[in-house]
Length: 354
Image (cartoon, rainbow, N blue to C red; front, side, top):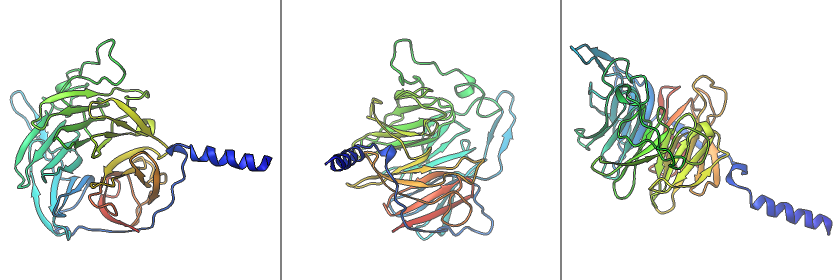
């Protein structure tokens, strides 16, 4: 009887374990190079990879020839990153935004439901929307006024971003529509825009579909609603919940669309890149990316239910095929066919899960 009671208690306790204590079964997968690059074009560090509704592949990469123009009062740099488009078979189609003012340090690219192309540039402090034809449609943020870019300090041009006023709850966020090294962008069903802002400000900024600033939340720290080193990536589910990668605190935080903290997901390493699949049965992918100075740790990618339950994981750190080096981007338009962008290996891999 005693042995039976102990077994029953153990079973009950295990069933109540949070996602942080669950095991992660290995998911079998294949990986290939999906891109056919022209002879005179190369990928640098891949900040972002995304697909549109036709299956075209977009890659925002840290490669190019940055230049500085010296005017009487306003030196500026541009051209350090490039945005490429490939068709669904990996054939090169075109370059978008060549030498545009805001392309400096590729951080992320996302495609919205209308097939608009959104580029996040960490060092120009800008989020840029291109229409499907490749024309600039909307700009958020602003490049700093002087070299070095970004300006030292908390805001664009070095201006200080005001801290939350006294008496506001933790995670109230800095009320500003300028960025300090933004990292990601996402959209809800109403077209509202959410920017992870990011490395410098540790907050989420919310805008309406026309780019009008609504509010922000987040600050530096370890409490719910705060972020450690950065608010690194962002994704939104069909109910409008906002998932934000907080690698400094080794968690993903979940908020409602107004920034109220709901829950956190732990036990999946230090999440760097996030993606939520479309459709009625959504799943979440999160990369436990190895740090750029250590290729021998982490590197796996987790597949989770939206409540944080671990379904499985795949991959490891390394340089060979089916290995990953500092994953910064995941595209998961299809649940079992993913595109993975790597900073450390200067490449995109197409992953097929079994």
